[in-house]
Structures are given as structure tokens and as C-alpha cells.
Image (cartoon, rainbow, N blue to C red; front, side, top):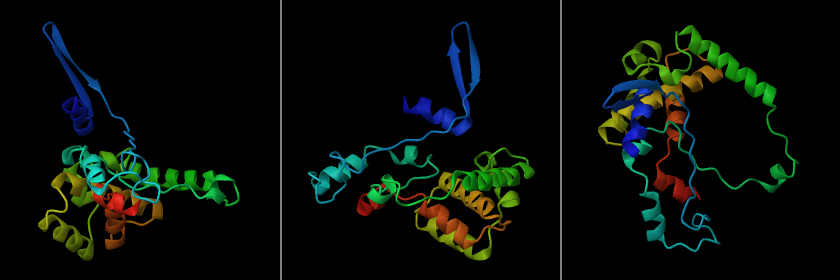
Amino acid sequence: MLECLRQPLEEGVIRIHRAVGSASLPARFLLVAAMNPCPCGEGGGRRCRCQPGERTRYARRLSGPLLDRFDLRLHVPRADPAELLGQVAGEPTAAVAARVAAARRRSAARGVAVNGLVPGSRLDELAPLDRPARRLLADLLARGGLSARGLHRVRRVALTLADLAGADPPLTEEHVGTALGLRAELAALQVAS
């Protein structure tokens, strides 16, 4: 099952082979997944009934190669009661939609519908890095904290962050650092709970 999932995640295509023939079907999609921070769902807080070892085993249920294919991994804290009860106004949807539309126009000007489709071979051209950003990524790669696949994903997310801010490349250490922060490891997510 995981291999079937990895294929459309990687290539955007599902290939079906049968005795009478084969077919290739488009499979570009946005995968959104969620998981509790621990088996009981309380994430190590006062009400958590899990032992530390249980939380660690629970987090390890997702393989590294599968997690590496998620562009964004973040902890979502419990909602603030004031927000739930409508006492705190968030950013208006129209403002967010306008910023997203502007970012999509920037990626379209590069010849891609969305930055997630920028081929790795074109990242140096379309998403160049400034010197501090390059040093940050080189250090992380040297320490084994980021895979080659992860590097490409981080650069694409950093490009999107720059687009949302209305900034032109080269990508800065701030763009890359924020993209890395949106790619937290499960162990860090558990600590944040």
C-alpha cells in the first residue's frame, strides 16, 4: 500500500499493469493528514495517560521516507477558547485570498502552476539561494538533518513563502528558516504538545 502511495506522491502518475494492457492515470493531489500527538490524544499534557515510551513508539509508526514526502509538518495547538467563541477576529478571508492569488501569479510567471511542481533541476534557476541560506542548508545536509528530497521540498516551500511576502529570489535565510520550521520532526512536535 505504501509503495502505491509513494508512486503518485513522487511522479503524479498511477500506473496499472494487467495481462491485457496497461494504463497511466494522472494522480496529482494534495494529501493532508493528521495524527494525535500520542495514543490518548492529550500529547503529554496534564491529562495525558501515556508513558514516554508509548509516545515515542506512536511517533515512530510513520516511516521516515513517508514523512519526507510531506512538505509541511506542524503541531496544531488546542484552539484558544476566545477564538472559538468569536471574541478574537482573525485575518479576513479576502485578504488571505488576495495574497494567495498574487503568489500564484508569481509562480505562473515562472511557468509553473504552483511552486510544488518546480522540477528539482530548475530550483537553482527559479529559486536561487543567497549565501546565508545556502550555508544553512549545507550545514543541515552535512549533519544528516535533511535528505536530498527534503532539500528540494524546503526550497519549494521557501519560494512559496517568498511569493506570499511579495519578495523576489534569491531566497533568504529567513525564507529557508521558516520553511524548515514548517517541517518539524515528529519528536519536536511531541515536545511542543
